[in-house]
Image (cartoon, rainbow, N blue to C red; front, top):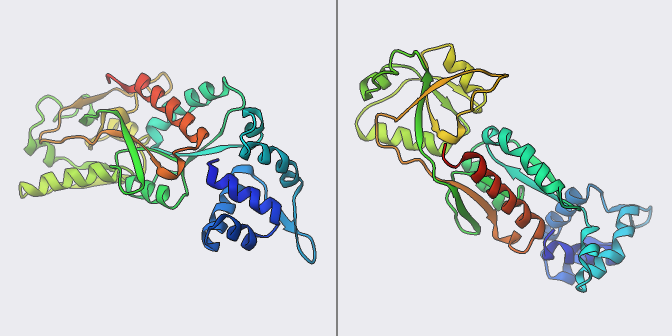
Length: 294
């Protein structure tokens, strides 16, 4: 929880009144209401409840008053740690499937550790918009930093054309052959889809989208049982496992495609948020370990 939220929370617990708390910390009422809602989500408690003639603090809010004062006064790390944390993360279903367990285990080794919430991925544009609105904390995707959203590259990506190993086009993937087969489009990768369509249009060509699916984990079985071809980042090609023994051909696409790098994005409002910073550092390390060199 960043310093801005802590200050507002302290004022709310003192005033037991949102408008007075907002005035005390110099926030417009709508911004204060949004910040209070964020505190409620992080702490999983309403903080204020109806006391009949006026609002009153919940039991959780009462218990937070003294530790919060200590934290704001520069108290011990233990005092700050009494404020429960939840870091919200947006990334595609794959690589989330690979990194989620490792991330949880790595964070659990240090107590207290922040709780994690993996949110539903709807594409890069949606993820950046949610960062800007304060509806998520970290994004692992292909969008570029903009405005108040900052980011760093964690993986230099490459695009591959993916199909079943015995696909008729697998032995010689020319542009003409690639376009002659129906394509499988992964809707959640809007950045790459736009790049592909722009490249094809520049050559005065078109492709047929035979099927659109919402996520990457549906891709292997669909490719294995059809003549569909997908273009996707290499790190998003689910590796064959004992549970899903699907082996696919991954070839260089027959047109110049510069894959956008995988970036870890966060809003500048979290620059001093220790929990978000910790999760970002651990997540970056795990992504590099699991995917660098694929």
